[in-house]
Image 1 (tube, rainbow, N blue to C red):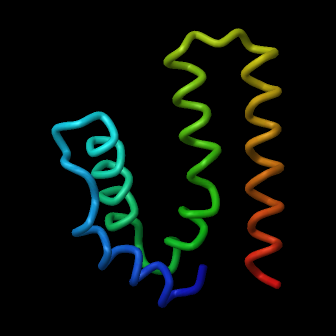
Image 2: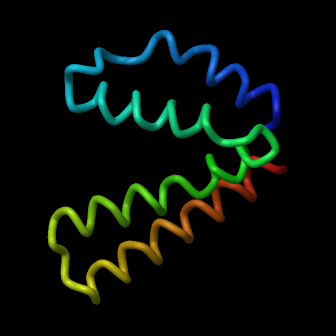
Length: 88
């Protein structure tokens, strides 16, 4: 996602769900973290966020280490694949 795509995404933040709901809290936190990321690093932040979210989710669920590693490997692979496709 290029510079303009990230800026558009941030501008569309006004359309996010109600922060009093679980989805709204997650989305609100995500947008705030993205906004707080220095502009040159935002594209990388978007690219890597899935892995961080999956790691947090797996830890919160108490997932055993081998299962967590398998999940994170899949998420990382998927993110790399999507990033390559977006660059084409």
